[in-house]
Image 1 (cartoon, rainbow, N blue to C red):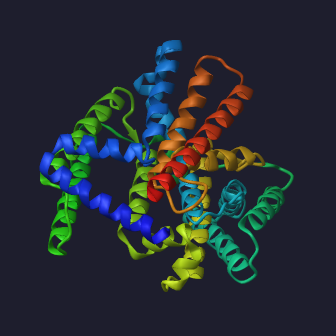
Image 2 (image 1 turned 180 degrees about the vertical axis):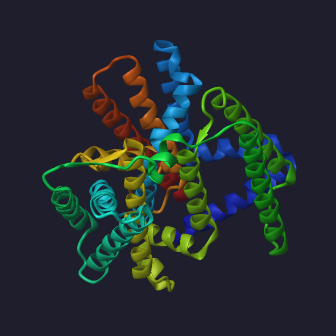
Length: 416
Protein backbone atom coordinates (compact mmCIF):
# COMPACT_ATOMS: atom_id res chain seq x y z
CA UNK A 1 0.00 0.00 0.00
CA UNK A 2 2.79 2.42 0.86
CA UNK A 3 4.52 1.79 -2.45
CA UNK A 4 1.29 2.19 -4.41
CA UNK A 5 0.47 5.45 -2.67
CA UNK A 6 3.95 6.82 -3.30
CA UNK A 7 3.77 5.91 -7.01
CA UNK A 8 0.41 7.56 -7.27
CA UNK A 9 1.76 10.74 -5.68
CA UNK A 10 4.77 10.92 -8.01
CA UNK A 11 2.53 10.40 -11.07
CA UNK A 12 0.21 13.14 -9.88
CA UNK A 13 3.14 15.51 -9.36
CA UNK A 14 4.41 14.88 -12.89
CA UNK A 15 0.93 15.46 -14.32
CA UNK A 16 0.58 18.68 -12.34
CA UNK A 17 3.92 19.98 -13.56
CA UNK A 18 2.99 19.26 -17.18
CA UNK A 19 -0.32 21.02 -16.65
CA UNK A 20 1.41 24.13 -15.29
CA UNK A 21 3.88 24.14 -18.15
CA UNK A 22 1.11 23.98 -20.77
CA UNK A 23 -1.63 26.11 -19.20
CA UNK A 24 0.35 28.54 -17.01
CA UNK A 25 -1.76 30.28 -14.33
CA UNK A 26 -4.93 28.31 -15.05
CA UNK A 27 -2.93 25.11 -14.73
CA UNK A 28 -1.53 26.28 -11.40
CA UNK A 29 -5.04 26.99 -10.11
CA UNK A 30 -6.26 23.58 -11.34
CA UNK A 31 -3.33 21.83 -9.68
CA UNK A 32 -3.97 23.62 -6.38
CA UNK A 33 -7.66 22.65 -6.46
CA UNK A 34 -6.84 19.00 -7.11
CA UNK A 35 -4.41 18.90 -4.19
CA UNK A 36 -6.95 20.48 -1.84
CA UNK A 37 -9.55 17.90 -2.84
CA UNK A 38 -7.11 15.08 -2.09
CA UNK A 39 -6.29 16.44 1.38
CA UNK A 40 -3.05 18.23 0.48
CA UNK A 41 -3.97 21.36 2.41
CA UNK A 42 -0.43 22.61 2.99
CA UNK A 43 -0.34 26.02 4.65
CA UNK A 44 -3.80 27.06 3.47
CA UNK A 45 -5.65 26.55 6.81
CA UNK A 46 -3.16 28.62 8.81
CA UNK A 47 -3.09 31.39 6.17
CA UNK A 48 -6.89 31.53 6.15
CA UNK A 49 -6.88 31.53 9.95
CA UNK A 50 -4.40 34.40 10.04
CA UNK A 51 -6.58 36.43 7.68
CA UNK A 52 -9.66 35.79 9.82
CA UNK A 53 -7.77 36.72 13.01
CA UNK A 54 -6.53 39.93 11.41
CA UNK A 55 -10.01 40.94 10.26
CA UNK A 56 -11.60 40.24 13.66
CA UNK A 57 -9.01 42.15 15.69
CA UNK A 58 -8.91 45.01 13.20
CA UNK A 59 -12.69 45.36 13.54
CA UNK A 60 -12.30 45.59 17.33
CA UNK A 61 -9.12 47.67 17.35
CA UNK A 62 -7.79 49.26 14.12
CA UNK A 63 -4.36 49.69 15.71
CA UNK A 64 -3.89 45.93 15.39
CA UNK A 65 -2.82 46.24 11.74
CA UNK A 66 -0.75 49.39 12.17
CA UNK A 67 2.87 49.28 11.05
CA UNK A 68 4.08 49.54 14.65
CA UNK A 69 1.92 46.60 15.66
CA UNK A 70 3.19 44.42 12.78
CA UNK A 71 6.81 45.24 13.60
CA UNK A 72 6.24 44.33 17.26
CA UNK A 73 4.44 41.09 16.38
CA UNK A 74 7.30 39.88 14.20
CA UNK A 75 9.98 41.03 16.64
CA UNK A 76 8.51 39.29 19.68
CA UNK A 77 7.52 36.19 17.70
CA UNK A 78 11.09 35.40 16.64
CA UNK A 79 12.65 33.85 19.81
CA UNK A 80 9.92 31.27 20.39
CA UNK A 81 9.63 30.84 16.63
CA UNK A 82 13.25 29.68 16.57
CA UNK A 83 12.47 27.19 19.33
CA UNK A 84 9.43 26.04 17.34
CA UNK A 85 11.71 25.45 14.35
CA UNK A 86 13.51 22.79 16.39
CA UNK A 87 10.16 21.29 17.37
CA UNK A 88 9.28 20.99 13.68
CA UNK A 89 12.35 18.78 13.16
CA UNK A 90 11.42 16.51 16.05
CA UNK A 91 7.79 16.24 14.94
CA UNK A 92 8.90 15.28 11.43
CA UNK A 93 10.34 12.15 13.04
CA UNK A 94 7.09 11.51 14.88
CA UNK A 95 8.76 12.37 18.20
CA UNK A 96 8.30 15.17 20.75
CA UNK A 97 10.51 17.35 22.94
CA UNK A 98 8.78 18.76 26.00
CA UNK A 99 11.92 20.30 27.46
CA UNK A 100 12.77 23.01 24.90
CA UNK A 101 11.52 25.76 27.20
CA UNK A 102 13.62 24.57 30.13
CA UNK A 103 16.64 24.15 27.86
CA UNK A 104 16.21 27.69 26.52
CA UNK A 105 16.01 29.11 30.04
CA UNK A 106 18.99 27.10 31.29
CA UNK A 107 21.15 28.15 28.32
CA UNK A 108 20.29 31.81 28.86
CA UNK A 109 20.95 31.52 32.59
CA UNK A 110 24.34 29.93 31.99
CA UNK A 111 25.27 32.74 29.62
CA UNK A 112 24.15 35.43 32.07
CA UNK A 113 26.04 33.90 35.01
CA UNK A 114 29.26 33.64 33.01
CA UNK A 115 29.01 37.19 31.64
CA UNK A 116 27.60 39.12 34.61
CA UNK A 117 28.87 37.25 37.66
CA UNK A 118 32.15 35.86 36.38
CA UNK A 119 33.17 38.57 33.94
CA UNK A 120 33.59 36.47 30.80
CA UNK A 121 33.00 38.03 27.41
CA UNK A 122 29.55 37.77 25.91
CA UNK A 123 30.91 35.66 23.05
CA UNK A 124 32.19 33.07 25.55
CA UNK A 125 28.81 33.06 27.30
CA UNK A 126 26.94 32.57 24.02
CA UNK A 127 29.24 29.73 22.92
CA UNK A 128 28.84 28.05 26.32
CA UNK A 129 25.05 28.29 26.03
CA UNK A 130 25.08 26.74 22.56
CA UNK A 131 27.35 23.97 23.82
CA UNK A 132 24.86 23.22 26.59
CA UNK A 133 22.11 22.87 23.99
CA UNK A 134 24.23 20.58 21.84
CA UNK A 135 25.17 18.33 24.76
CA UNK A 136 21.58 18.01 25.92
CA UNK A 137 20.48 16.99 22.44
CA UNK A 138 23.33 14.47 22.25
CA UNK A 139 22.27 12.91 25.55
CA UNK A 140 18.69 12.67 24.32
CA UNK A 141 19.85 10.90 21.16
CA UNK A 142 21.86 8.37 23.19
CA UNK A 143 18.88 7.70 25.46
CA UNK A 144 16.69 7.08 22.43
CA UNK A 145 19.13 5.18 20.21
CA UNK A 146 20.95 3.07 22.79
CA UNK A 147 18.40 2.57 25.54
CA UNK A 148 15.16 2.92 23.63
CA UNK A 149 13.73 5.51 26.03
CA UNK A 150 10.68 7.21 24.46
CA UNK A 151 11.16 10.88 23.65
CA UNK A 152 8.11 11.79 25.72
CA UNK A 153 9.75 10.31 28.83
CA UNK A 154 13.25 11.72 28.58
CA UNK A 155 12.06 15.16 27.44
CA UNK A 156 9.54 15.29 30.31
CA UNK A 157 12.37 14.41 32.68
CA UNK A 158 14.43 17.15 31.05
CA UNK A 159 11.63 19.66 31.49
CA UNK A 160 11.61 19.07 35.23
CA UNK A 161 15.33 18.54 35.73
CA UNK A 162 16.54 21.52 33.69
CA UNK A 163 13.99 23.80 35.26
CA UNK A 164 15.39 22.82 38.66
CA UNK A 165 18.93 23.34 37.36
CA UNK A 166 17.89 26.79 36.15
CA UNK A 167 16.85 27.73 39.68
CA UNK A 168 20.14 26.36 41.05
CA UNK A 169 22.26 28.27 38.52
CA UNK A 170 20.50 31.57 39.20
CA UNK A 171 20.76 31.10 42.95
CA UNK A 172 18.97 33.15 45.56
CA UNK A 173 19.11 36.36 43.58
CA UNK A 174 16.76 34.85 41.00
CA UNK A 175 17.17 37.51 38.30
CA UNK A 176 20.23 38.64 36.35
CA UNK A 177 20.06 41.83 34.29
CA UNK A 178 22.19 41.85 31.14
CA UNK A 179 24.79 44.65 31.03
CA UNK A 180 24.12 47.87 29.14
CA UNK A 181 25.52 47.73 25.63
CA UNK A 182 25.06 43.97 25.51
CA UNK A 183 25.22 42.58 21.97
CA UNK A 184 22.11 40.48 22.57
CA UNK A 185 20.13 43.45 23.85
CA UNK A 186 21.22 45.71 20.99
CA UNK A 187 20.59 43.01 18.37
CA UNK A 188 17.14 42.01 19.58
CA UNK A 189 15.70 45.36 20.64
CA UNK A 190 17.29 48.20 18.72
CA UNK A 191 18.60 46.96 15.36
CA UNK A 192 16.29 47.46 12.34
CA UNK A 193 16.66 47.45 8.57
CA UNK A 194 14.84 50.39 7.01
CA UNK A 195 14.98 52.79 4.08
CA UNK A 196 16.82 51.95 0.87
CA UNK A 197 18.66 49.05 2.48
CA UNK A 198 15.41 47.21 3.13
CA UNK A 199 14.34 47.46 -0.53
CA UNK A 200 17.76 46.30 -1.73
CA UNK A 201 17.39 43.33 0.61
CA UNK A 202 13.99 42.50 -0.88
CA UNK A 203 15.34 42.62 -4.42
CA UNK A 204 18.24 40.38 -3.39
CA UNK A 205 15.83 37.84 -1.88
CA UNK A 206 13.67 37.86 -5.02
CA UNK A 207 16.75 37.46 -7.24
CA UNK A 208 17.98 34.48 -5.21
CA UNK A 209 14.53 32.91 -5.32
CA UNK A 210 14.35 33.34 -9.10
CA UNK A 211 17.85 31.88 -9.53
CA UNK A 212 17.01 28.81 -7.44
CA UNK A 213 13.79 28.23 -9.36
CA UNK A 214 15.51 28.49 -12.74
CA UNK A 215 18.33 26.25 -11.53
CA UNK A 216 15.75 23.69 -10.43
CA UNK A 217 14.15 23.74 -13.87
CA UNK A 218 17.53 23.31 -15.54
CA UNK A 219 18.51 20.44 -13.24
CA UNK A 220 15.25 18.56 -13.77
CA UNK A 221 15.40 19.10 -17.54
CA UNK A 222 18.95 17.73 -17.71
CA UNK A 223 17.85 14.69 -15.72
CA UNK A 224 15.01 14.05 -18.15
CA UNK A 225 12.33 14.90 -15.59
CA UNK A 226 9.26 17.03 -16.05
CA UNK A 227 9.81 20.62 -14.96
CA UNK A 228 7.41 23.54 -14.40
CA UNK A 229 7.25 26.12 -17.14
CA UNK A 230 9.02 29.44 -16.81
CA UNK A 231 5.67 31.21 -16.93
CA UNK A 232 4.54 29.63 -13.66
CA UNK A 233 7.90 30.47 -12.08
CA UNK A 234 7.66 34.10 -13.14
CA UNK A 235 4.17 34.30 -11.65
CA UNK A 236 5.50 33.04 -8.30
CA UNK A 237 8.45 35.43 -8.41
CA UNK A 238 6.19 38.35 -9.30
CA UNK A 239 3.79 37.65 -6.45
CA UNK A 240 6.69 37.28 -4.02
CA UNK A 241 8.27 40.56 -5.15
CA UNK A 242 5.05 42.55 -4.92
CA UNK A 243 4.16 41.09 -1.53
CA UNK A 244 7.58 41.72 0.01
CA UNK A 245 7.83 45.24 -1.41
CA UNK A 246 4.41 46.22 -0.07
CA UNK A 247 5.14 44.75 3.36
CA UNK A 248 8.54 46.44 3.46
CA UNK A 249 7.03 49.81 2.56
CA UNK A 250 4.42 49.37 5.29
CA UNK A 251 6.79 48.36 8.10
CA UNK A 252 9.13 51.19 7.07
CA UNK A 253 6.38 53.58 8.17
CA UNK A 254 7.48 52.56 11.65
CA UNK A 255 10.95 51.09 12.35
CA UNK A 256 11.36 48.64 9.49
CA UNK A 257 12.29 44.96 9.73
CA UNK A 258 14.03 44.02 12.96
CA UNK A 259 17.35 42.19 12.80
CA UNK A 260 15.83 39.62 15.13
CA UNK A 261 12.98 38.81 12.72
CA UNK A 262 15.31 38.68 9.71
CA UNK A 263 17.59 36.28 11.57
CA UNK A 264 14.62 34.02 12.27
CA UNK A 265 13.57 34.15 8.60
CA UNK A 266 17.15 33.31 7.59
CA UNK A 267 17.14 30.22 9.84
CA UNK A 268 13.79 29.11 8.43
CA UNK A 269 14.98 29.46 4.83
CA UNK A 270 18.22 27.58 5.55
CA UNK A 271 16.34 24.79 7.35
CA UNK A 272 13.83 24.57 4.51
CA UNK A 273 16.65 24.16 1.98
CA UNK A 274 18.30 21.50 4.14
CA UNK A 275 15.04 19.58 4.43
CA UNK A 276 14.06 19.80 0.75
CA UNK A 277 17.38 19.85 -1.08
CA UNK A 278 19.75 17.60 0.83
CA UNK A 279 20.07 13.88 1.46
CA UNK A 280 19.82 14.54 5.19
CA UNK A 281 16.45 16.23 4.72
CA UNK A 282 15.11 13.40 2.59
CA UNK A 283 16.24 10.93 5.25
CA UNK A 284 14.45 12.93 7.97
CA UNK A 285 11.17 12.65 6.06
CA UNK A 286 11.84 8.99 5.32
CA UNK A 287 12.41 8.11 8.98
CA UNK A 288 9.34 10.08 10.01
CA UNK A 289 7.21 8.39 7.36
CA UNK A 290 8.30 4.82 8.05
CA UNK A 291 11.33 4.20 10.25
CA UNK A 292 11.66 0.50 9.49
CA UNK A 293 11.42 1.04 5.74
CA UNK A 294 14.02 3.80 5.98
CA UNK A 295 16.37 1.52 7.91
CA UNK A 296 16.01 -1.24 5.34
CA UNK A 297 16.75 1.30 2.61
CA UNK A 298 20.12 2.02 4.18
CA UNK A 299 19.28 5.19 6.07
CA UNK A 300 21.39 5.69 9.21
CA UNK A 301 18.38 6.09 11.47
CA UNK A 302 20.40 6.57 14.65
CA UNK A 303 22.43 9.35 13.02
CA UNK A 304 19.24 11.09 11.91
CA UNK A 305 17.87 11.01 15.45
CA UNK A 306 21.16 12.39 16.78
CA UNK A 307 21.26 15.33 14.38
CA UNK A 308 17.60 16.17 14.89
CA UNK A 309 17.63 16.08 18.70
CA UNK A 310 20.91 18.02 18.77
CA UNK A 311 19.53 20.62 16.35
CA UNK A 312 16.33 20.97 18.36
CA UNK A 313 18.19 21.62 21.63
CA UNK A 314 20.63 23.97 19.90
CA UNK A 315 17.75 25.99 18.45
CA UNK A 316 16.15 26.05 21.90
CA UNK A 317 19.37 27.53 23.30
CA UNK A 318 19.46 30.14 20.51
CA UNK A 319 15.84 31.06 21.20
CA UNK A 320 16.58 31.35 24.92
CA UNK A 321 19.52 33.68 24.32
CA UNK A 322 17.48 35.93 22.02
CA UNK A 323 14.56 35.96 24.45
CA UNK A 324 16.95 37.05 27.21
CA UNK A 325 18.21 39.88 25.02
CA UNK A 326 14.68 40.96 24.19
CA UNK A 327 13.73 40.96 27.89
CA UNK A 328 17.16 42.39 28.91
CA UNK A 329 17.37 39.83 31.72
CA UNK A 330 17.21 36.19 32.77
CA UNK A 331 14.95 35.12 35.62
CA UNK A 332 13.40 32.06 37.21
CA UNK A 333 10.48 32.52 34.81
CA UNK A 334 12.71 32.17 31.72
CA UNK A 335 11.67 29.20 29.63
CA UNK A 336 8.67 28.28 31.72
CA UNK A 337 5.96 25.82 30.68
CA UNK A 338 4.31 28.55 28.59
CA UNK A 339 7.37 28.57 26.34
CA UNK A 340 7.18 24.80 25.81
CA UNK A 341 3.51 24.82 24.99
CA UNK A 342 3.73 27.86 22.73
CA UNK A 343 6.63 26.43 20.70
CA UNK A 344 4.92 23.05 20.25
CA UNK A 345 1.59 24.70 19.46
CA UNK A 346 3.25 26.96 16.87
CA UNK A 347 4.80 24.00 15.04
CA UNK A 348 1.50 22.09 14.96
CA UNK A 349 -0.70 25.08 14.13
CA UNK A 350 1.70 25.98 11.33
CA UNK A 351 0.99 22.66 9.63
CA UNK A 352 3.50 20.10 10.93
CA UNK A 353 1.83 16.73 11.42
CA UNK A 354 1.92 15.06 14.81
CA UNK A 355 2.04 11.73 12.98
CA UNK A 356 5.47 12.39 11.50
CA UNK A 357 6.78 12.68 7.96
CA UNK A 358 4.84 15.80 6.96
CA UNK A 359 5.68 19.42 7.63
CA UNK A 360 7.85 22.34 6.65
CA UNK A 361 10.30 24.73 8.23
CA UNK A 362 7.82 27.47 7.36
CA UNK A 363 5.34 25.85 9.75
CA UNK A 364 7.24 27.38 12.66
CA UNK A 365 7.02 30.85 11.12
CA UNK A 366 3.35 30.69 10.24
CA UNK A 367 2.36 29.11 13.55
CA UNK A 368 4.19 31.57 15.77
CA UNK A 369 2.81 34.54 13.80
CA UNK A 370 -0.70 33.23 14.44
CA UNK A 371 -0.08 32.81 18.16
CA UNK A 372 1.70 36.15 18.54
CA UNK A 373 -1.08 37.86 16.59
CA UNK A 374 -3.66 36.34 18.95
CA UNK A 375 -1.72 37.46 22.00
CA UNK A 376 -1.16 40.96 20.64
CA UNK A 377 -4.79 41.34 19.59
CA UNK A 378 -6.17 40.16 22.91
CA UNK A 379 -3.84 42.53 24.76
CA UNK A 380 -5.00 45.45 22.62
CA UNK A 381 -8.68 44.80 23.26
CA UNK A 382 -8.03 44.36 26.98
CA UNK A 383 -8.89 40.68 27.32
CA UNK A 384 -7.56 38.77 30.33
CA UNK A 385 -4.55 36.50 29.76
CA UNK A 386 -6.61 33.47 30.81
CA UNK A 387 -8.62 33.88 27.61
CA UNK A 388 -5.40 33.72 25.57
CA UNK A 389 -4.66 30.23 26.88
CA UNK A 390 -8.19 29.06 26.09
CA UNK A 391 -8.08 30.55 22.59
CA UNK A 392 -4.64 29.06 21.94
CA UNK A 393 -5.91 25.66 23.09
CA UNK A 394 -8.89 25.90 20.79
CA UNK A 395 -6.73 26.88 17.80
CA UNK A 396 -4.34 24.00 18.55
CA UNK A 397 -7.21 21.51 18.74
CA UNK A 398 -8.58 22.80 15.45
CA UNK A 399 -5.16 22.47 13.78
CA UNK A 400 -4.79 18.85 14.93
CA UNK A 401 -8.34 18.06 13.80
CA UNK A 402 -7.61 19.52 10.34
CA UNK A 403 -4.40 17.48 10.17
CA UNK A 404 -6.29 14.30 11.06
CA UNK A 405 -9.03 14.95 8.52
CA UNK A 406 -6.57 15.78 5.73
CA UNK A 407 -4.51 12.68 6.60
CA UNK A 408 -7.63 10.56 6.30
CA UNK A 409 -8.46 12.21 2.96
CA UNK A 410 -4.94 11.50 1.65
CA UNK A 411 -5.28 7.90 2.76
CA UNK A 412 -8.61 7.53 0.97
CA UNK A 413 -7.20 9.16 -2.15
CA UNK A 414 -4.26 6.76 -2.12
CA UNK A 415 -6.56 3.75 -1.86
CA UNK A 416 -8.66 5.13 -4.69
